[in-house]
Length: 161
Figure 1 (cartoon, rainbow, N blue to C red):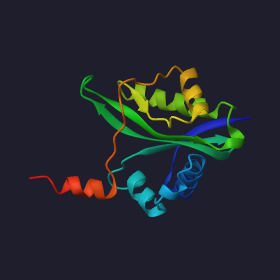
Figure 2 (figure 1 turned 30 degrees about the horizontal axis):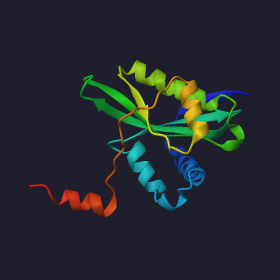
Figure 3 (figure 1 turned 90 degrees about the vertical axis):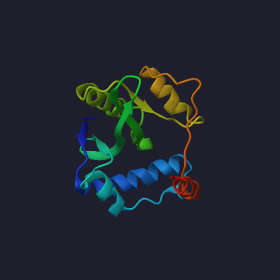
Figure 4 (figure 1 turned 45 degrees about the vertical axis):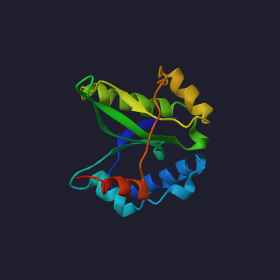
């Protein structure tokens, strides 16, 4: 099997959205996917791209992706990369493509002078947790992810002076 990792292109947007939907189905979160191709075009390839995508191919067939964006560490005073999603279609798992996607992302982080590469993983996703630990990642104890969305986000936004 021949693996290839490449940067996503504009014409990959329908594929990226399909992979996002497949990831959401795997995570039992399909009901939360409201992304559209137009939004992905704007935020991945528009005037101010908010994220980047790597596409993983096996024998020329795109079967996985990694979506990431730049973060910043105040303690390190250096940028970082945050991996939002890493997904490989089930039929292609265990063949090294996920490892190659993560390795390419780590390479980009080093090349860009980043101090770290971070991501979150669902507590119940034992295969992903084991994969990340085999790669040398360690969970951060004492940290809890917080999120504001929807109405709560709008409510807090109205509290500014």
